[in-house]
Image (cartoon, rainbow, N blue to C red):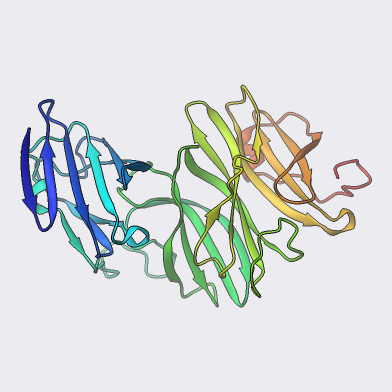
Length: 313
């Protein structure tokens, strides 16, 4: 085993050529050098010896194309260990990786859209969880903060007062042991039906699909500070269905005549409608005619009917 120390980061490489970084930090970011066409490396993050997350990152072995920040702000003063199988001690990123309180990005790149929304860096896909509360429009979006390709699906987050000028906020939802964070929706819990509200602000609820090799299921997160921080519900997933590869993209809304939440899901070649009084326990109420997942996601879904009359609540 070899050991190297750089800017308060201890770098160890074992006899199998696998590398780990260990440090305590009072700084916000670990700046990661990326090689855009490099190998995808499974990168595991431990805090006080507990695995908290796993990412796939193209850390630079031969050359640095750009940098991305790993946000450490929630673990200040704790013991951090990052394990990276397949990265040996000759990798250029190990000579350049560093801790910093700043990460500067340039919004004046030649090909960056000037009007349409873009994240500061990384890869984005479809918008999720669009909701209005307290004078702000919230935009969440499918996001890979560690590269320029589909991977590490998370929910990026921004807010606006006019739908034109956007304030970037920290990533709202990262992958966890239940899987990556796919599409979903967000709502304001006006009546505190879920019981999460702790102060004067209404609770925002986010419903999202989590995906891993074992399947797809629906999870819930909530915020009591106008969406600035999010807590994943301890009882996740709130809805799971065995042997269903496509069980995804929850559209949730409050149906006042029945005092219940309604969730519409794309399930294989049809839609399913569920209801709940508390946003945590869901009951199947109806199954639609067969269609396709693409039609379900992008087509006109006939959900604006009399839900109570049709037995959907």
